[in-house]
Length: 253
Image 1 (tube, rainbow, N blue to C red):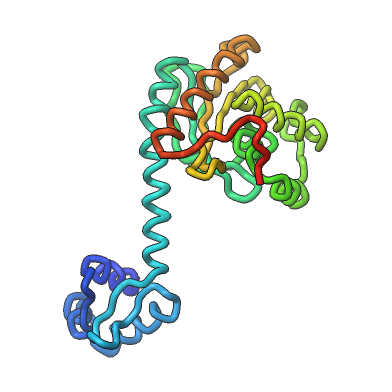
Image 2: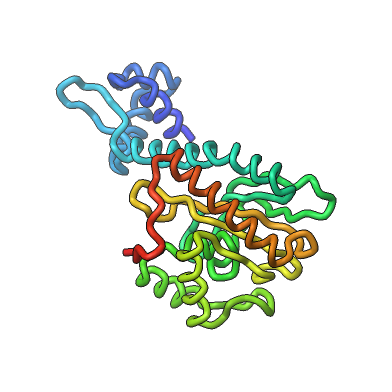
């Protein structure tokens, strides 16, 4: 905790601070301050300018800060689009990212309907058994998909889960062709979902958005209609973020 306090002090001082200044502002003894700064330096979080004799944040802190800003940016940028999707469809909209072999849900706009789909933020779903997961997986390089399948397998979550490799690859090819993924009770019985990928400037997956609801309100014809809407919305977000939507026949690499 004390180390984090020192990072905050240095982050607020672009020109750096002398050891005595850091100690005074943190309320710590100079010896304790020096020991903490050396520990942070050994991990790449701070550096000492030997010529000026001041301490500054180092590149590792900068990279962590940039990662946070990037995550905050695409989530914040996506929220109005999620709200718009829910207003247009009456169903719950979600945003998720890939973490290894799973999809993690980070944002949601709930349906106003009494019977609705709700996903706890931070919860996970297998890539092969969720709309968001398949939308992300479809644009990964084949060797990465193979690695995920080798590590995670194709566990059946419901009787409709794709648990055959050939069937999964065919589904992913269809996702690239249509621009959206369908989840037909593959992750939850009675639930339909459509999802589309948000791409970064390189055309690789950044996140995915989805619309989910009960089959009673989302039968097959409406599922495909919603797929078009979700795809267009994902394209809008990608454009807003300065990303690039790859062509359907562009092989991920």
